[in-house]
Length: 123
Image (cartoon, rainbow, N blue to C red; front, side, top):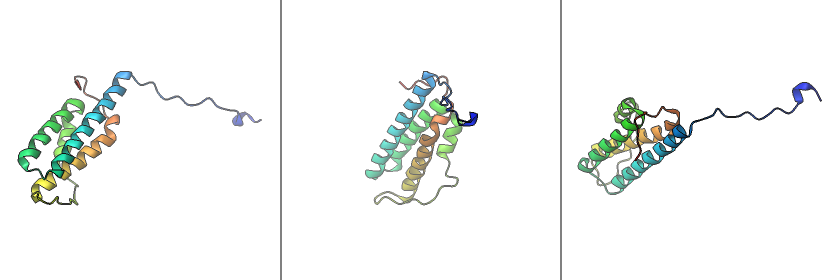
């Protein structure tokens, strides 16, 4: 058997600290809970009086977990479009909630690649 055909040992993943892995898993769960709350708001045809506190709560979670730069992105409408209006909601409320959910979904998909704030305490 030629040398290059010899069986190679499997590549091992770089060691990852349990703290960072656990924090990432917690972040996804907490962010997912926020998304579930947004779904309830949408289903209940929420107004800005109900949506705004959710945005503040979600922003605070994001800031404490991954920093204020991600909050800025979460609150930005740049590059977003195509909102389906939920019957019973105003255009502004539906758009605001839909855009925040799009940003939250984006964050959830990449949160495991972000540095977790050292002071973040998911409890």
